[in-house]
Length: 119
Image (cartoon, rainbow, N blue to C red; front, side):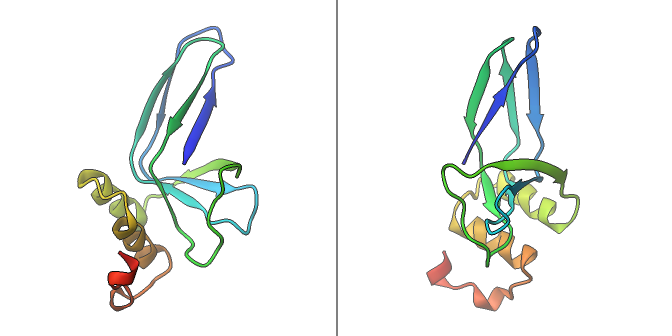
């Protein structure tokens, strides 16, 4: 997933997107996402920056995202999802195992349902 940030000011811009930031899609059939690795970006005046981000789905039964999907930043999660995102960032688990760990919390999926097929 990538994020594009525009700096329409005449000043250098420093942007921090915090760990746990929730992104909600314009299309309600697509899953919301949670940022699992904090992002820092500096953008020159009147320029834009496109950065890859680490984010994971938080609604297992909604559709996955597509390259042209539009998302809006919402509140930063302060609960158990944030705690899991902190662990995923700390141990650099940005894969299927991490995604399943997120779904255990976001969708209340029992750990017993996570098996080798999910990893």
